[in-house]
Image (tube, rainbow, N blue to C red; front, top):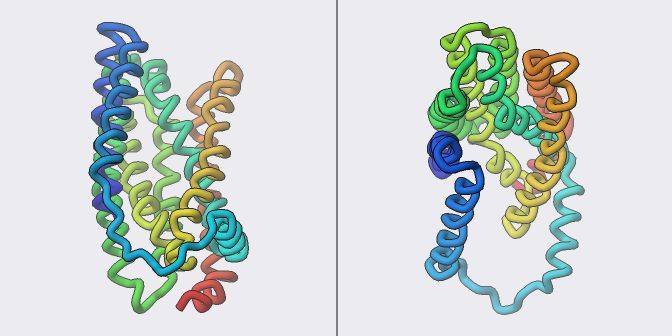
Length: 273
């Protein structure tokens, strides 16, 4: 799953730079046309090429019952609810970082829009590729002896990644800021490497896709507010303090995971195993 996830980071790197180059040369509208067109082509390819190789059962479960049972399984597992709260914190800080870091680099150290877009995506996402590989190896290598290994790796990613967001907020040179973004990306990968696997350990395989959807829907709805919040705060407190605030949110996001590991995980895990 982490190898698959690394493609997302490569996409961030390429699209961030390519979109900025296109925007500077032809305007932002052309970037949307290009990537939207790619999406339509990819959707058509997937529609014809992806095959379901899962053996069909003798009878199918009605969709409404499956949906209802999926909701019950999700909200009836306290550890998964806590993981969803942690994911919301992850997205809250992460969305603000994605949207505002290029502007922050331009305003604080005078980078061009192209260089700011490159720095904000390249160092963070490249480090995340290494982070997911390390985090996955740590979790998979210890999961048989320590069933909570995925939770601890996720929490470690938050605790070790937050200081780098604070470093970014205080940085005054391009080197320091790029180093901070790489550190944040490395430990972001720790969390990303187990974001879905930790949920799958706790829920019946019939509801894994639904649990993933519920968690992402909740997290992205919450996370979508942070870019607006930083925009509101920018005139009064500045982007530096706004990014520091995201570092605090990032650190606090470890608390729901720790709560799950200490109080709810054992019972939830035992029900599935």
